[in-house]
Image (tube, rainbow, N blue to C red; front, side, top):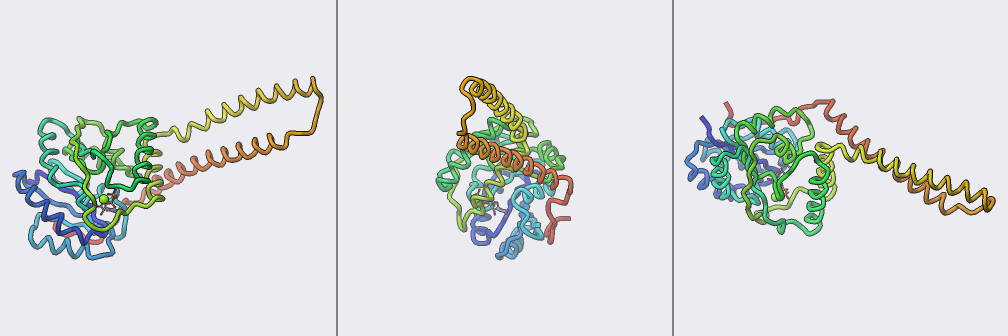
Length: 309
Ligand code: UDP
Ligand code: MG
């Protein structure tokens, strides 16, 4: 009977891997719980898989899944939660930005009766300035327009009770914005603040475009406002156009017809053209995601499975 499942996604983390286990084992030992460590090698091109296999020689409770290619962190976390046998599961980054020493605090909070415990980061200092700005704006927008409440600073460092694991596993969608799904399932949710550490080795896998896509994945999965907002824009623009038309009629009757109007026509055409393309683009974004959902492809393919019965 496994009590605690640790879920770790790896993408080209061979260098920091030894250090991670070096810090993780004492913490897990001290909890006194029976545990398993589920490592998902998300299509690494370095020696991550070999190093994980090597780690397994010291501890058979380490289990390894190797993905057929890079399917992304969300797919890796989904896989981990599906494979987890524990009464509770903890998901965390494998680059040591999420300190393992916080795990006992998460468990303590769970013992208080919380079924979902987020480790929330106190600051974003370890991220670049531009990324901090981007994250902040995204979460500000998300909080205003999405239908769920995500705690400030919550990420993928999280403890799940079995009830929450089963709930998340029961959600069939392809677009897996994990933070959103986690907040959406409900249950008693608690937080434990922690200080993010600098990345142990290597660099972040996120560039600007990946972040933008991730942001829109999140927004579109939990809000339909970007789709609906155009109704209001359309109504507002039509209203202004109508008022302008009335003004033009009177103007023509009183002062007669004169030629000018080039500038206002250009502005009108460009503005409305831009607005139409933008709204079409948003519809396209949603449609592309509907397309992905309808195809219903598996979220990931497993190439190797080590240590599972
Ligand atoms: N990761 C992954 N698949 C990916 C990208 C990242 O499994 O396609 C893992 C990575 O190994 C790390 C975690 O997800 O353990 C967080 O990634 P990263 O440190 O690049 O993100 P950041 O901390 O900058 O948000
Ligand atoms: Mg990181």
